[in-house]
Length: 249
Image 1 (tube, rainbow, N blue to C red):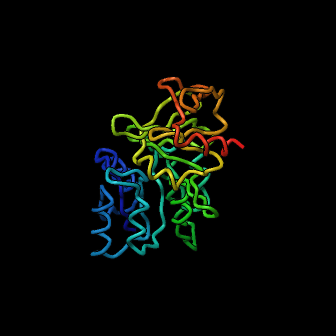
Image 2 (cartoon, helix red, strand yellow):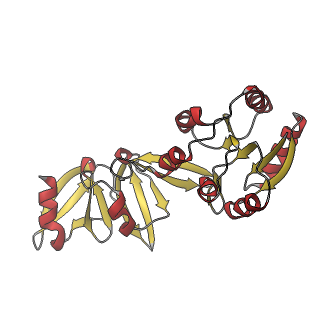
Image 3 (tube, rainbow, N blue to C red):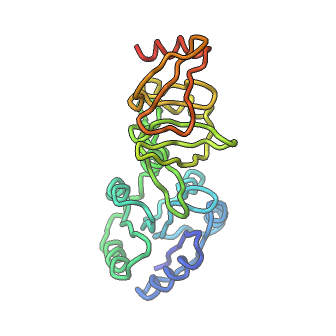
């Protein structure tokens, strides 16, 4: 049985190859990026089984399947937290946490071998989970950030504010940590629910539920204190003050 390994960390890919071949499977190809995988699948027969790392060096691996009509069964080899694995559990053969345990790999391949009907993963559901899109209103309910080779997920109720600094865009969590995002405040305008978040000036979005105090400020403006964030003053601009009061109700 031929399989494909898609993994951007080459030592991890080689280790997985040895483990898979030990179980009697033949590794047809090891691919290391979204671009490389797309090019390969365009020019080669598609395998029945793929070992897939979600976070690749040039993007999330679901982007491959947005460009290729691929029905292969998938075993994920991820560094996700367990809650993420449970969210996907019914949509793939299995999920293996790195570093991969040989016994767990053997069990996953046994599961694959006993499947008479191989149901492809619902990639639209994977996309919605990773991006946090809500199909009903298109506002994001979850944001992912890359920390080393791992992805962390934060729901919007875990985020106190978004802010820009030194040409970067950050989210600040209720646990008082900052994380860099690969987006801009302008993009967030359409992604955040206006019932939950308000852009108070050019550099800040604040979460209504994170506001601890609102203080009158000069020139008909307001100063906002959040529950945890205290790195910078958050001032509602004069141009946004009227809309801010309306947003507060």
